[in-house]
Length: 520
Image (cartoon, rainbow, N blue to C red):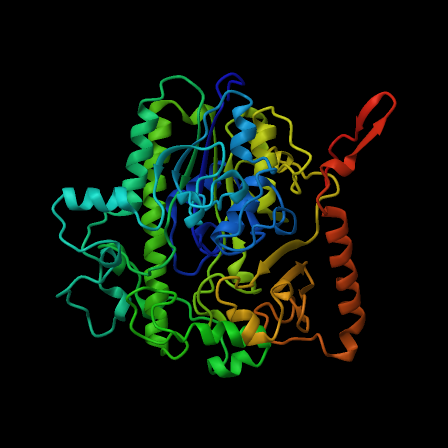
């Protein structure tokens, strides 16, 4: 049982991991034994959704508890307003030194820096309040230096994920089967886990908070041996798609724009030589098999970490959370990556293991209620006995962890995608929109999914009859009442959750009166 004076938090986040990619939820071929074990000892949330994409906006929601419409850091590179508190700043109030291993992709507020400050030249900044244990952004310089110190020979970051020269590829395997030059033991995944474990061994008995961020299974889709060969491409499930990318693109002008962008070689998967909208079934299956192998590599490192927690005695006092920033299309709808509105890009895993005796009722539980990334920060803060800030749009998951269900829990999931392009204006030109019109918002419940575009026609899908979102019903007269209902619900959701920190205060002759934070 966790000692309230000795409570630790291990907050693990992967990158671009689909919510269906766990054997604990019934994946047809993928096996994730270590995360399955964590789920058996904790609570697994089957319908957990990210609030935004790509990485920076999604992590902003994850780490501030705010919907995109409130934190407004909508693109990788859009500044995160300094007025927002976050999980690191809040836990510091209780004496924790939240330490980062990996990255948070937090874009600095330019009002805090002179114009030529290097912090304003990158979107890969560190969340305010985080101490850096090991920062591993895209350049990966610490890991690259480690590889070179071990004798690996390559030019730099642009070559480290290049397929190994001279690697024999069986005739029934695709391009991504060929492994990189580095071994699994020397991979960036193992490098990250090693850094965390070394740090943990030096902590002693002082309570700790660690945010451990694995890059994988984010592209490039390439896996070291033996993970490159774990899955037979012929045995992996095929993507859900129409007969061609051109046929898929007829669903909506936005989808056509996104598919057209994928025709550029290397834009999604560096060193991949083919047009992703034209590859055949064999190549597609190989890419999916490689992605699954990359997931297994992360699962094995998480297994190492969990075993170390148990051996070192930390397990009994540590809240363990596993989730990720956003999902991955993986060829569904001919799409790759995490852009757009389809479920596959936003449905993500969430497993929470609470060591308290009060959480015994949640052990092995799988929750079907809709949960969201904004719920993570309130959960951690409540578990630590800290006040949840007024700004948070999410709700604590503690009642679920204890075997119950919070009163009045949401019956839908929400997410947003900002596709403006301030630097190049690509989306604006392709769709004839102003930058402030380049956005979409989704409301999805058990029955239907509504996608609202600021400057384009909406989409409506029947999620019971059409779970893979093949048929848009928005123009069907018979569905007009459903469309209206969802549009009204979307408006009500946005009105209720509009930024509200000061709106809950009132100045009186007796001073400031503030409403207590109401559970949304």
